[in-house]
Length: 484
Ligand SMILES: *Cc1c(COP(=O)(O)O)cnc(C)c1O
Image (cartoon, rainbow, N blue to C red; front, top):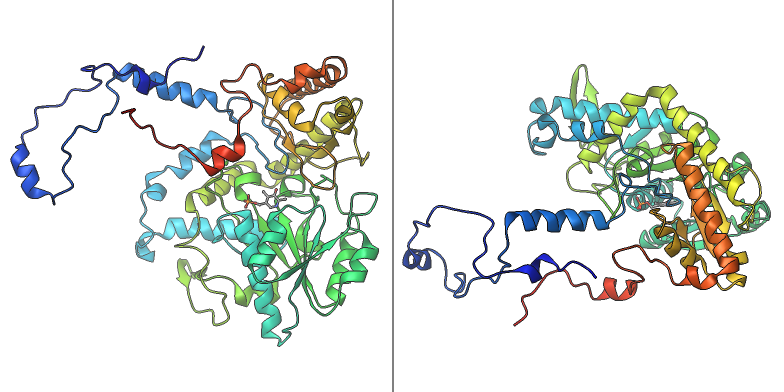
C-alpha cells in the first residue's frame, strides 16, 4: 500500500499558514487588474497542514536515488561525490548575487576566477587557451567542430566536410558533427577494443576535417596507438578532437595536448564535481592549441597589468555560443575543486579511480563475460551475454540492482558490446562499498542461473517498479489537476 499523495489528503478548511486579513477590497482588485486575470473561483489547491506539506516533499526527495544517498556507478557519467565546500563557494554572495551586466571594475574577483580557471584547465589538458563558454560536453563538441571548420576555411581548405568517429563513440559525437553540418564516417574498433589503424588509414583523405576521439575510450581502454593515430590524421591535413568526458582517468598523468589533440572539451560537471543527475546545469569548456586560438568564442577574458576585462576584438571568432559567459556557478565549483586538491590531489583522483575500476573488474569477471580482458582505466564494460542465455537481460540485472539500493551501471552502451553493463565506480568510494556492490552483482549472477524469474520480476523494494519510460517521456503529467 502506498501513502496517499498530499493532494488526496485535502480536507476542507484545513490550513498550513495564517496571514493577516486581506485589506485590499475585492472591488478594487477588479479595477486594478485587467478583466480575465481575477479568479472567479478559488484555485482548488489542496487544503493541508504545514507538516503534511513537509512530509510530502521530503518523501518525494527520498524516492530518488542520488550520489549523496548511495553508490552510483553510472559508466561514462562520473557520478562522484561532490564536496560540499563547492556549494558553499558557489553560493557566496559576491558570486551568486553578481549581475552579469555589472561593469568590469566591480566584477574583478569573478573575472579573475574565470581567468585562472581557464589557465588551470589549459595546464591540465596541455592546450594553449580555453574558453569557459560552452555549457555541456555536447555543446563543447559542437563549438570545437565549429572552430575546426573555421580553421580549415581560413586556409581556403573548403573540401573538409567529413568527421571520423569510432564505432565505440558516445552518441553525442556523431550528433554534434551532423549538427555542425559535417558528414559522419564511422571508424571500426580492432580486437583490442581500440581504433583499427588500417580502417582509419583507409578512411582519411583530403575531405577529413577531424577525428573525434575519447581517450580512454568508452570501453574504459586507453588508446595505446594515440600518437600514431594523431600522425595519420595530421598527415592527411585533418585535426584531432578530444572528447574529455573520460578525463577522470588521466588527470596529472597524460595530457591530451601532448598526445597530438588540437581541440579538447572537458565536462566540468563530471570530472570536476558538480552534481549533474537529472541533466544539468553543466559546463563544457573547450581548449585549443595555438592555431585555433583566433577562432575562439568571444568575449575572451584578458588581463592588462592587474586588471581583468572582456575582449570582443577577435576578428576571426566564431562568435558567441551562450548568453553571458557560460554556467558561471559550475565554473566556481570546478575552480574550488581544483584549488582544494592541487596538482598532487588531482593526480591521486585519477589513480584511485583507475584502481577502484580494476578492483571491481577483477571481482566481477568471474561471473560476467568481459570482452576485453586487460587492465582498464576508470571504467570497464561487462557483457550480460552469459545471463542472456539463462533468460535474463541486462535490463533485468539493472532493475534487480535497485533492490540492493544501488544505482545501476550504464546499460546497452557502448553499442559494440552485446548486453553492455558499463561500470564506473569513481575514486570517491571506499573498499566496503565496492565489495558490497560486487557481492550484489555476484548474487544476481547466481539468481540468473538458479531462479531467473526472481531477476526478471525485479525490482521489489522501490516505490514504483518497471515503468513505461517512453510513455513518461512522450506524455509527461507534470501538474496535479483537481478531479472535477
Ligand atoms: C557525457 C558524455 C558526453 C556528453 O556530455 P554532456 O555534458 O552530457 O553533453 C560525450 N561523450 C562522452 C563519452 C560522455 O560520457
